[in-house]
Image (cartoon, rainbow, N blue to C red; front, side):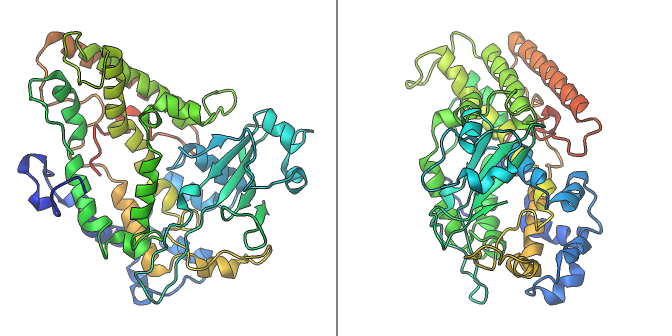
Length: 450
């Protein structure tokens, strides 16, 4: 609650959106329902789908290469693993150096999935095992805003294996944080700086519309009876618990892209050659740090907590990179990866099975979001993945806060570096069924504006 406004209209005019239409989530939801051809299901809003083919019906008017590919391959293990690298949440996977006690996977459990003539422990020592742990979800209160529909939040752990062909495949999943019979392992505030200050000039493009979008989210997304309550398992207060819990683990170093990558043990390209989020992120981080370094003159005054120019450069790089590239990487892929609901359901309406072998197709269909929640989910991910009509992308600075020639030259250098990165990413994506472009500078807005 760091913004002293409850509605977008209460904000100072200079930080409101030029037009609210692009970020009116209810309006965009309605547009999405129309575009996605969901109206035919409105009379059955709270009913379950019949089978997986029903979900295809709402894809009739979707034209999105990645979404269609996900629809076709979402059941396959390689697609499951690939999303931890280049999906809309590529920041959780880390190298497994030791199995946690709460996840007692044995070699016998996973040996059929291991390709090399090594034990599980040897594979771990060789650096071929990765882990994804959603402990942050453990104990989060599930959505209970609809008394007619129970919803569930789990905190799973997944073990992943790098094959000889460098694919990341799941080899063991535990649905909760505590092993046992009831939890089976399943193998298989704004800157107060004067406008003439160079730091103000540097940062102002990168906080454009950010207060506005946060207020809009408070007004329509995370409010009581907002879209989170309507569609997500963490609605009704669980999403607030989740954010509070996540903030406790937030450190400055966790926002420094290279440090965050290294801390998870996924920094070596030879280990994970298809981790494009990491590779593209490094390029954009270095270009951004170079630009901040060029703009940040030696005579610039420092905040008291930053003792050197180098520290200030890194701090400002974190702000710019997080507001631009990192947000783009985890936001604009939502429609790509989450519009096919079986691949990324917003909620589950059945508790996970307590025994192996009980998760048949019928249980899965009954667990997936009903038609109404599916519609709200689709509208949300579609709206959140749209760019502003007057979007300004990384390197675009039409409001000339800087008039100094060296800064003008630094901007031009920055733009050239970004153009080179964009071209290299475009070349790499040519011919790929699953192109990765979320870190491409021509698709990175300057600021968090949606």
